[in-house]
Length: 157
Image 1 (cartoon, rainbow, N blue to C red):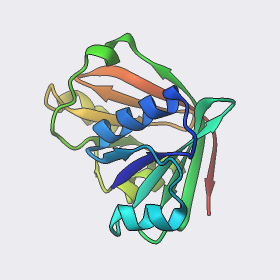
Image 2 (image 1 turned 135 degrees about the vertical axis):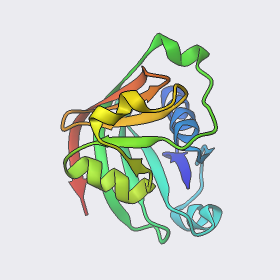
Image 3 (image 1 turned 180 degrees about the vertical axis):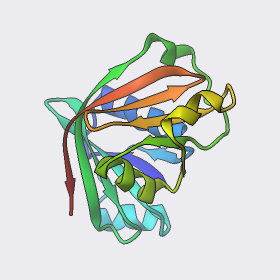
C-alpha cells in the first residue's frame, strides 16, 4: 500500500503522510507533478491513500483501489500528541477497534485484524491500535494517543 499527498502539499500534509505510512507499515511519497496514471504505475497494483488539503491543512483522506477507483473518503481535522515526536513505530501491523460504517470501510481497505474494544487492554505493550468511532479516529501506540482525526464527513462511492 502507498500513502501519498496531493500535488502541492503543505508541510503539515507531508508530515501526516509520513505518520500514516509509518502507522500502517506502508510506503510514503510526495506526489508532486505525478498524474493519476503515473501514480497507478508507481503503486505497482496496490491500493493507495491520497492526503488532501483544506485551507492549507490536511483535511481529507481519499482511499483508492489498485485501479485508481475512489472507494471512500473521510474529511477530518487532526490533532497531534506531544508523544508523537519521540515515538518509535514498532514493526507490527495495527489492529482496528470500533463499530459502524467507517470501521467497516477501513477494515475492508487495510485488512488489519479487528478486535473488540474490551480486548484492547489485553494487547501487547507495543501494539498499534486504530480506534474508530462515529466522530473520531484515534491512532494509538503503546496505550497512548499519538494523533487523532475529528471526523467531519464520510462518503462511500
